[in-house]
Length: 165
Image 1 (tube, rainbow, N blue to C red):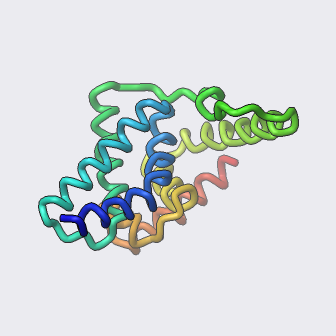
Image 2 (cartoon, helix red, strand yellow; image 1 turned 90 degrees about the vertical axis):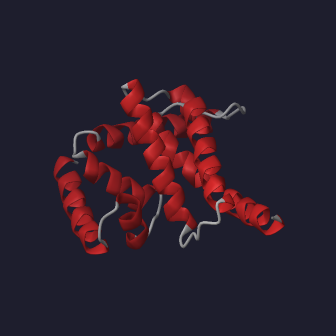
């Protein structure tokens, strides 16, 4: 039992920030992202306790988180809204840091608005590859597709995004 706890602790420490970011970029609400992240790791723990063999922890965590997010939007029908105060930390910033954060947030908002205009499948694959830094095989596992299909979809998604930008 101790081995399972140690294993879970390692996986949690390694991936909690990545999973939170993945969730936050989709729900844009800190509290909801924390809840979904917690639920993701709870479900992961249940799989460990059941004795399931886990080949790729990171891919499994993204699959679980993605499923919870889908359920969340199906039940709530939420609309994504970008809020600067959600992105800013509670600590004090210098004027230069504030200006840099505002500039960065504006750039991110513009890119996200453009991303919102492309197909959901393209948007998701771009975020998984370039924001979450998942490998093609991991993305294939998360989306339930073949790796070759992921490469083709990513190429099409990038071409589409380039056309918009």
